Length: 321
Length: 283
Image (cartoon, rainbow over all chains, first blue to last red):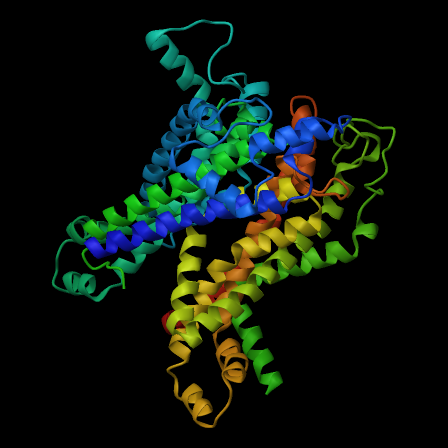
């Protein structure tokens, strides 16, 4: 077990390191230099250029620059945004909360609903209920998340006028305490529904197929032949064995979840990392983009590591190698 | 021999409804790609005088966008972009995956350890953000988008191919080829890859669907190729008009769903038909 955790930990750290180096090299290889961006189009003063290059360390060899950046990262410093002139870490920290609230709520809802639907569909395999549910899930899995968000806005905001279509709070009202929470929840309805709907299919798929797989195993057939009540077999043996794979999916789908959250945030003007990223793209603010990318990689690595450990604890059969 | 293979393929297609639907869908997409000028009602690149027309107004079946382009014709021409992105990026990803995974599994030893670790690392990477960063940095031409999707998604294919190569290299026909003195490269290309490639093909088909979704996502962030017509960009541009002209977004999104579903069905169908348990259950 210790060896297993160690190996996963090394892979995780390696991933973060590789993301970092990759980001660094990409910026180096990219056409145009950040200094030119900082100086503006009309300014060609070599003195200012030299000064800026020295300030950001661009005059040193690539390897030295990489080392410097690594050292900064080690101290938790993600560098400064070249547009806003603020530490990137600070900017991300401000936006992290809303992203986590939205992402986690949707992921948990999707996990519960998807698994329940999957188990139900597996029990009624081949019946009309299963066909309808499976078919719907198939279509939802092919849906671009941002598009579903836009459609829900058309339906619920502009036509029915039930839910607000943008923001996290009502800008005109100044709520505090419980009213603030209610306001946020109200604004979160549409984005969370969109995200949940598009996340459900993967949990559905894995739950359904693993229930079916366990049902066909020989020991279950033996129980059936021995006359054990079907309900009891299901609750005691099938469900327990079939639930396990959903745990791994939760980890594997982290990257997908983050992508989804970012895109959905842009659709609904949710004040999280997605909007930060969007502005960074539009302004070509590379340090911010790299910072976001790095934070994403780190969070995915951490969650996957945790999930792997939980999984190994839950299922003693699973071991590395 | 060849005839025989064709009949087997035809039987496989007939035996699985998903595969059948996928095949028909791909044929339909091909027809739309080739016959786009005949099927569309207008040239989608022309900015007409009818701005933000509704459904059926002035002969525009699905209305027009804010520049007066015909939405129906844009969707028809958008098939070309989506299929191009899907096929080329999935091909790049498939070829890289087969070569790297095949080499890792067949050669074993240190090569395998290093490549496996790289695959593990890549599986943990939030690929979409890497793609996004590269496209933002190096320019958003369609070629860039296709190449970047290709080179960031190969690890899935490599993993499958590696597993295949690992089991194939223990088989008698590979061992005897080795004994006959064939070089490693010959064995890899003549025996390992042709015999182990089928799961990768099915996975590549699913990769095509994901490539379409990735391209749409990039376009939605304003990182699509502005010089071409793509469904993702139609949604991006139509986003501003969702309250007044919902049809721009709605129909291009439906087009994406249909295209993605076609590739999903093809991939899932192939996976099912090639699964040995599938034939056993049917017999």
